[in-house]
Image: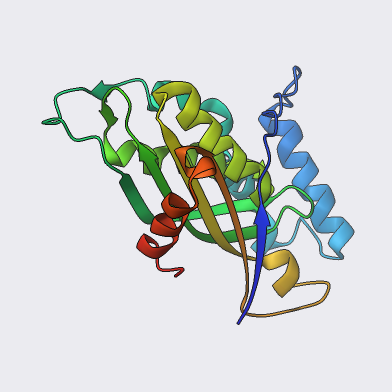
Length: 207
């Protein structure tokens, strides 16, 4: 298996277009794409496809209507003095590449060193969903997740790693199968202390 590793950098969150097309306009666009692909959008099997695609997009790209700050807004301070690493690993995600609009999917590993309380563990999985359900690059998504953790939790350090397979490499172009791209980013203590990085890699199974 080929594994490609990249380090993510800070990237601004893309803005939502001011004039959002209507559902009817979106369905018309799907019909145009079907015709461009070489099929007949009026045939029985494709007649309702534009409506189905539009509905599916509402779910697949629901992250544009979600706020990471809201997801991470509630923290718990009564943790019995616990101040060591909190790690949630193997969080599954499905996203869509912004270059070809085809899926990439994999797992996210998130760790942080608490400063003033902890966040509910399920919230970290929901945070991944906020950014996965947008048109994305893996590098940008890695940066967005860790930036949201730093901005909303103020930890002593954070670490994020994404491992994903990209259908734009599998289904088209080079058609390379079983290739995983790995991106990671460290901040705070994790960025300053190689031992903390090694501990993170060991706990997610990369050492």
